[in-house]
Image: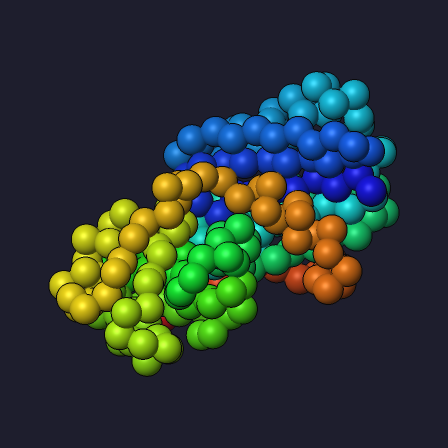
Length: 226
């Protein structure tokens, strides 16, 4: 199955393409330039792979939470391609994709995205299973959630996702009895993981093309008019 996967949930833009026995991947520290670089990255993978848009069987993108602008760009691009090609669109939660490669970690996994305003988009996992809600929370609240879900005072905690380094600084004072570590790939894009999850029959339920990103906080524009 030929699948294109787009991760525009944070500053690192990543795109993955699978076809036949091959997998092609692109990753760029895009900052705020997702709209400029996404289509170029997709075209580069098509050129390298020898595939074209008409060869695709499915498109996957990050559902959120994450950057409001980035998610909208990824969703609109994926939706436009899916509608034009008449193929399924699948969106998956960003935090699930960040936790997916860490399922073998012997403890709790907390992927986090810096949500600004001293807060993080985050969720807690163990052995690949989601244990909490998708949260918009400060470090102290996240620490309390980890403590409540821990099996023991010695259970290790692994922080991942683009907000991991900042969260590490802020959460450690609330977890003196814990062993908190940072995933060495915390800042990588997750288009490969999104693609692998999109292949799974467990999550292989296409989105309605009228669906949109998962926002767990109103945008600044909405808050300003509330």
